[in-house]
Image 1: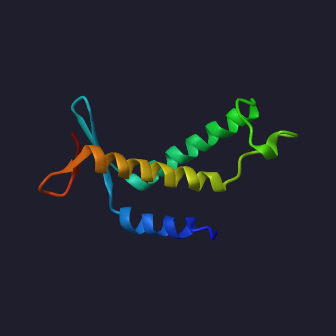
Image 2: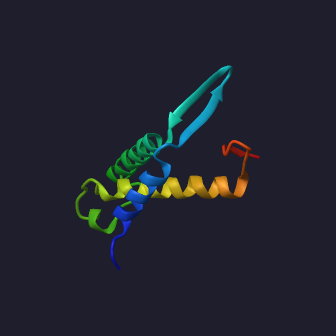
Length: 105
């Protein structure tokens, strides 16, 4: 089975390049680009995964004998999983207003 992650990365950048996330904390409104947020979250999950395997909370089969860092490829997998999760949540729980903005119900 060919690895199509690189194609999926390119498609996600093409589709979501201009996408912004809007949120509000108290009276302050914020607008941030979505792709860097997803990459940052994927990186933090990847770090947590490495910490967890270091302390043997869980191990991959290749880490049973000796610990090593989880591969960088997992970072891309976490990114794609986060993107898919966000799209599915918006599709199921979201609705679009007249300007094309998504909001949760």
